Every structure is written in structure tokens, then in C-alpha cells.
Image (cartoon, rainbow over all chains, first blue to last red):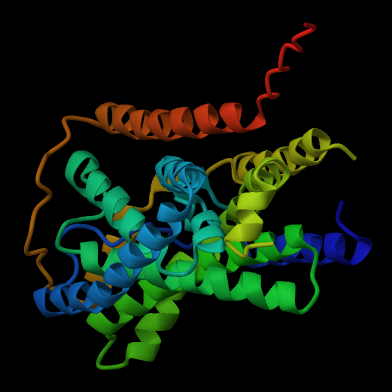
Length: 245
Length: 98
């Protein structure tokens, strides 16, 4: 399974997060309806468009190759659906959601998950009053674009450095989740600078989002590895064709 | 170690990590975090008014739980259906003796 070194790295990250996490700070998830000023809301939305278009094209290409890819995509989409619905407690005393986009990003590339995220976020904004329509652009950018790009890049980098696939998947899902929330912090800091300073707000919001998220990112990493292991065992040729392994 | 054993170990670790805060922080509220970010925003910009309201107003936290549940069920249903089909053993072909 994991080598001694890999186990040590994972355990270390757990201890660090538990140690850092014992603070009375708040956690959060997506940006709530109406809490991003209109100019920012629109800007983030427009910023998403090219990535979504890239995503649709990328999906079309990969799914047309084989029907099994469509099924895999459905699996990745459902994975996002489930993980976004889970509120997991964190050591900071609040809860937050994992994202679930890591799996799809690793298998289908950095852009495919953008459109999936839009769908999930739309569902949650309209039916659950969670997140928002005005904040759809910003939330899609953090969860559907930055997250998957980081996950994909991390996975490829880890594989290039010779890491075992399991560790690569874990780090990709972990960092993707974490960076999603760092991006959310940045979006809020840009919209609400403290007395003109974006950095001060950034530190404040990161304290809220990012630290809460570390343990959750680990959980997401582990779950992603579990599902990926199964896919690797039973759909090896599809993964090889998609140049994942 | 078999795939199943590996996966179970990973899932157990994940569950333990998720349960950890519940056992260690007895007094925490574990508030559904949206309100906490709202507080931070109000702290920074006290005059800010949200300019848009959610499309629907959920009657209670219970209904919200229901909808999250349904979301998780739909997602899980799809996941396990697909995984079930993927991991199913291929049917053995009947050999024609004649």
C-alpha cells in the first residue's frame, strides 16, 4: 500500500492540521447569495466562460471515444454531487463541504469539471438556498476551475516525480480542495478589503476558510483515492486510453 | 493487500478524521458555516447589504437537511450503480458441446 515515507507524510499533514486547527475560527462553504457586489459577481462569471467552453469541448472529445467514458464521467459527476452535499465537521468548530472535483479533474482533465460544477452549484443555489445565483460565477471559478486545474496539475506533477498513483491522487484531491477555498478567501478579500487592504482581509478570510478546510481536504483526498482505486482496477484500459495512468 | 482491504482502511481513516472534531470539541456549535462568513463580512463592511435574495425560502433546517439528503442519495445512487456494474463479474459463456 503506502510506503513508510508516504504514510509519514500523510500522518504529518494530519498532525499539522489538527495542531493548527485548534482555534475558535469560523468555517464556510461557498459564497452566499447576494454577498458579492454586482461588479465582482459579473466579473467572476465572465471569467468562467472560456473555461466552461473549454470544458464542454474537452468532454465532447473524450466521451465520443467510448461509451464507457460517458459512464466514467457520470461517476465523476455523481461524486461531486455527493461530496458537495456532505457537511463535515472540522476542528475549528464548524462544518464545511468537500468539493469532489478532484476525481473528475484527474481522469478527464482540468476543464471538464467546470460545467459539472456549474450544474451542481446551480442545483444547490436554486433548490437548497445554498451558495447563490449571483455568486455562481465566483463559486464556479473557485470550485469548478481553480480546484480542478490544481488537482490535474498536482496529479501530473506527482506522477512525473515518480510518486505512486495513490499518493498522486491523494495530493491532487487534497490540494484541489484546499486551493478552492483559498480562492474563495481571495474572492471575498478582493470584494471586502479591510480599510483598503486586500491582504488583511485575505488573512482574515483564509483563517476562516482555509484552516477549517485542511482536515476536510484530507478526508476528500482519502475518499478520492478509494474511488480511484476501484476505477483503476476495473477500468484500467479506459484510464490508459485517457492517458491517466 | 487486496483492493477491498486497502479501501476499507482508507475509508476508516477518513471517517475517524471526520469524527475527530465531534469528540474533541464538546462545546462547539458546528454551525453551518455560511453565517460565520457573513459575520466576517459584516465586521469588515458593516454597511454592506446583500443585494439579492435566494430564490426560495426553505421553511426550516429540517427541510434543508432533507434536500441535502436527497442530493447525496441521488449522487450515491448513481455512483453505486455504476460501481456495481463495473465490478460485476463477467457472465461465463456457455460452451456449446456440439
